[in-house]
Structures are given as C-alpha cells and as structure tokens.
Length: 291
View 1 (spheres, helix red, strand yellow):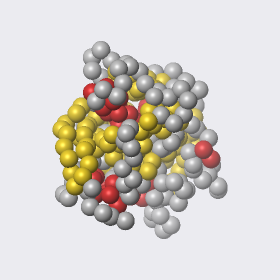
View 2 (cartoon, helix red, strand yellow; view 1 turned 90 degrees about the horizontal axis):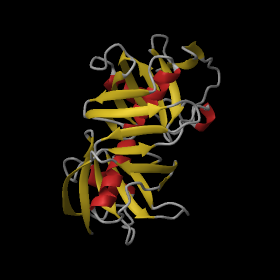
View 3 (tube, one colour; view 1 turned 30 degrees about the horizontal axis):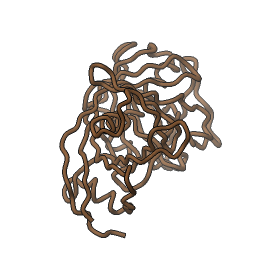
View 4 (cartoon, helix red, strand yellow; view 1 turned 135 degrees about the horizontal axis):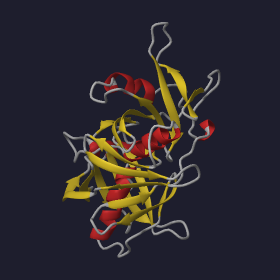
C-alpha cells in the first residue's frame, strides 16, 4: 500500500501526519511502527491521523499513535501540528477548531505570528483518574500540594524519587531536579514509565526551575522514549510547579527542541500551550503488509 504523508515538527517533537478525511487506511500497529522507524520508515515520535468529525460540535477527530504502535490519548505538540496541517491542506479556513481526542475535546488556535495555541483542557489530579495506584503510599505535603515517594525497584538500595502525579488527558509523573542536563533520564525514565503503580504506564518528566517564569524540562515519553519536546509534559510540569508554589501562572518552558509557553490560571481552568508548528516535507511511502 502506497500512502501520502506529511512530516511535521513542533519544538523538535516530530510527527508523520496522515489525512484520513476521505477514508481510513486501516493501518496495523506494526505499520505505525514502520512509519515511525527512523531507519526503514519515515521516522517520527508519533503518527498523527486527521479524521472527519464524529462528535457533534467538533470539526475533526485527532488520532495519535506512539512510535511503538500503541494508540494514546493526547499529544500537545502534535495538536499544534494538527492545526497547521488542516489549514495548509485546505481542510478548514477557521483560525480555531474543535478536535475530538481520546482524552476529550481540545481547541487549537492559529495565531497571527504563526504560532499555535492549544486549549489543553483542565488538568486531572485525582489518582484514580490518572490512573495512579496509591495503595500503601502517603502523600508528602509540599508547597500547598503534595508529591509521592516512588521506589524504583524492590531492593533495599533501589532509588526512591519524589514525583508530582497528574493527567493532561495522559498520565504524567514530574520530579524536580537540580540540572536537567545531568538528570538520570535514560536510567530512571523507563523505570518510571513502566512502574507498576501506573497501570497505563506514564510519561516521566524531569523539571528544573530556573525562576518563577522560566523552567527547563526533559521528558521520557510513554511509548516513545526521550523526545526533544513534549507538549503535555510541559503542561503537566508547569501545573505541578504552580501547585507546589514554585512558579507563576505563565511560564516559558525550555526544551531541547525549543520554547513552549504554558499558562494556567488555577484549578478547574484549562491549560493553554503556545508554540511553533512546522511542515518539514511531504512524500509518499510504500507501506508493507505487516500484521
């Protein structure tokens, strides 16, 4: 099967975008993995699919598959690329669209400066909705909120990390570090992602607070590994920092791929994320039959 694709990136988080507005391609998990493969496919952190709206009051359905082929609930950097894609490909002439995801409806908005702002919805804090298993754990009060002690192993000498846990439509565990460049992302990222207390796995964030309006962030993403930027990870990190009393309501997040601006006015209010979205190239690729 030969398919048309668009390669896009948002702050270095890169995507293969597929247009299924005229019919679904019916790709398997193995075929999504092929497209994401940087040696044999196109190469991407996630595969984004544009489909016609299913729900009343929405403009499109937004489907996300990680590089491991698994479907996930949300991708913030991808949402900005989604908005640019539907505009550039003539699928809409609106500046703001309402898009259905597995996590609910989001609203990307194209700005006059070419950057895209996405209403990511309100963060979720209830552990059972993240989901996060707190059985036998006690929350550790910190700055008006709390963190959780997470043992990364069963041995006496296993590391224990302190994480803030929340969901931005997908689960996040955020820990504070002194320096993101020396943080043990490669070691602890997979251990946190696959920790048994997160039944749907989790995105592991490593947050360095520079000052009340600037942070640095690295994220080991569920199903993708460390990426140059993670939009929902940036949202989760800033929300956690605000609730822990460390950050103001508007924060610039420095990732290895660029700067994202995150705004949150408090509990029950949506998180707004603003950042770049760029088309890299377009092409066609022969996708083999893979079960």
